[in-house]
Structures are given as structure tokens and as C-alpha cells.
Image (cartoon, rainbow, N blue to C red):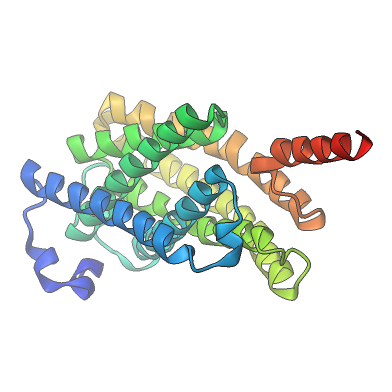
Length: 279
């Protein structure tokens, strides 16, 4: 069966992805692509009145939202392929690999290197730390990096990319908030889709647990211990903590459009503005 990467470029199907230099080349190209996309976003967004009036950290968040949205589309497409179309990875959920899975996971490592670097720099510069966001992204970077080193388990790693299906809509949600469109029909439609996509994330997470149950003997006997720990610690956190929390927050946000990423800053601005008026 033709792999998904062959639709991107036929040569990608014939790369020897087991070679370290091939993996590093794709990871490096991915990092450069997402970094360049962030720069292009920063340049083109200056044409927007809304963007020019954002604070510096909000501008960074805006550009990161563009990058995350692009990766979210990528992850959704490759995740859908792994679950519904690919017939090779399911043959051995621990050790089966394909050129498509190698390419998808190498691009993912490149993205999370960019994402974690940007997140770290932002936290240091602006002295603001999001525990859940950092935990999720750093665990993802470690997990997918181990997966590329150990070449296992591509099935779970590639299927898990579909969890990014909510990311583009989260990014649209935030940009609509910044443009003052929080009460438009577009906002309501986007939030409705977003909340239901978080519900679907829970379905996918249960699906991955079910596939683990179906293949438990193989998983227990053949999966490298570091990869086993990285996969199931992350899956447990996402299933029991992160997705339920984000589903709750997005549901509340659908009813009360508030940007909680900068909620404290907005409150401080309001207080300072009131204080000035009183004086």
C-alpha cells in the first residue's frame, strides 16, 4: 500500500529512516521549518492592527499559535492515516514501522524541540510558568525522542498524533478572542467544534488503552522499558488529568469568553486603570 509520505514526495517513501543521519535530517528540517513559520508569522502579522496592539508576550503567543495550528493539522492527518488507513503498523503494535510513521514522528520531534525551546525562552523572559503545558510538551519531547532512538512503538506514537486535532481550533479560539470576535457566529461554531473535539480526544485515549489491552502480551514482553514508561505515564496523564481539565476549561470559555492565558494581566490592567481614575 502506498504510504502517506509518497503523496508529499515519492522520494520520502524510499529514505532509509533507520539511519541516524536520515532521522536527524528530517528532525532538523522540521525544526527549521517551524522556526521559519514563526518568523514569517511575526513579519506578516505586523500588517494586522490587532497584532500591532498586542503586548510582547501576546505577540509571541500569537506566532506560536500559528505554528501550533499548522502542526495540529499535520498531526491530525497522519493520526487519521495511522488509525483508519494504514494496515502495516497494526500487524505488530510494538515493532512495526513504515516510512510514513518514521517521517511523521521525526517531524514531531522537530516540532517539540522548537516548541519546548520557545516555551523555555518565554518562561525565562516573562517569568510566567504553565505547569500543565510544560509537563505535556516536555514529556512529549522525551517520549517521541525515545521512540525515534528505539524505533518502537510506532503504532501508538503515530496513532497518538490525532490528539492534536483540537490544536488548530484552540489557536483559532485565541486569535478570535484577541480580535474582539468572541461573540460572533464564527466564535460560537469554533468553540462548539473545539469542545466536541476534546470529547473525541477522550475517545481516542480510550481506544489506545483498548489496543493496549488487546495486545498486552506483546506490549509487556517486547516494548523497551524506557519506552513503556514514557508512553503509559504520558497516556495516563493525558487521559486522567490533561484532557478532562482542558475540556472543562474550554466548556467554561464557550460560555464566558475569557483569555485565561493572560487573565491575571488583564485583571491587573483593569485594577491599575481604576486606580488611575480614582487618583
